[in-house]
Amino acid sequence: MKNSGNTILVTGGGSGIGREYAQRWHDAGNIVIVAGRTVSDLEETAKGRENIHVRQLDVSDAGQVASFAAKLIEDFPALNVLMNNAGIMPYEDITQARDLSDAKKVISINLTGPICLTDALIDHLRHADDAALINVSSGLAFVPMPKAATYSATKAAIHSYTVSLRKLLEGHVEVIELAPPGVQTELTPGQSHREGYMPLGDFISESMAQFAQDPTPEEVLVDNVKPLRHAEKDGSFDEKLDMIASR
Image (cartoon, rainbow, N blue to C red; front, side, top):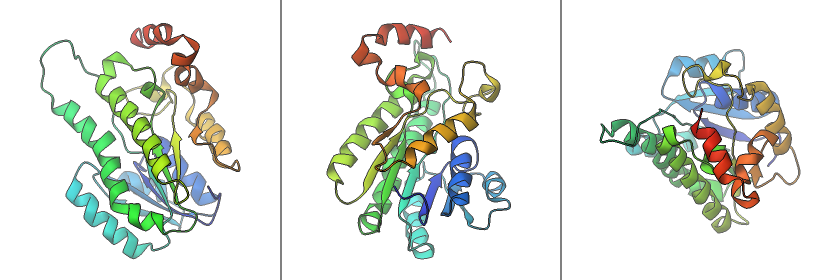
């Protein structure tokens, strides 16, 4: 992936990982569009940076995604990078019958949203110069957190979907998976100050250094997430699962 000269769309750009990536990429010489549901948060991301542009988008609304993509291509014909980052992570008790509205919302934002947005932009990206598609999964794609079972399942699905995209788009679009560990953001309440989670700035710096490599790795993995990514292979899956389940 090129370091500069791109036009990049970042979903979930109003906070956390999305905000930090948008600002870093802007400062490296890219045009960045941040999309999300809350305009005030997006405007805070863009504050003081003239080449960060704000667009409202609810990725869970398939009809809105289609019209958003069409207008985006019209406004930014040089668009060549999509980062599917928007996501939510509610805790849940799956051991008893419950209201499934939260689980359905997680699926619509974390999984169906990226699939729909990728579909809406894929014909454009296939013909764009230096095109790249970045899907944000999670270390929990590889060892789930039982109290966030639906979130973990959507991230496992994103990992699988990304592998398929990479194979089928080979030679046309560079497909990259970014799998964060637990990072100090407000993905869950209080997480931005929670001990044992990776400081956001450290995560961004370490992962951005991998994006700058030539070639960019197919999977961008900071050191903190590698124990989860490789747990199945190194025989530590049950141990890691017990550790995560006890949090």
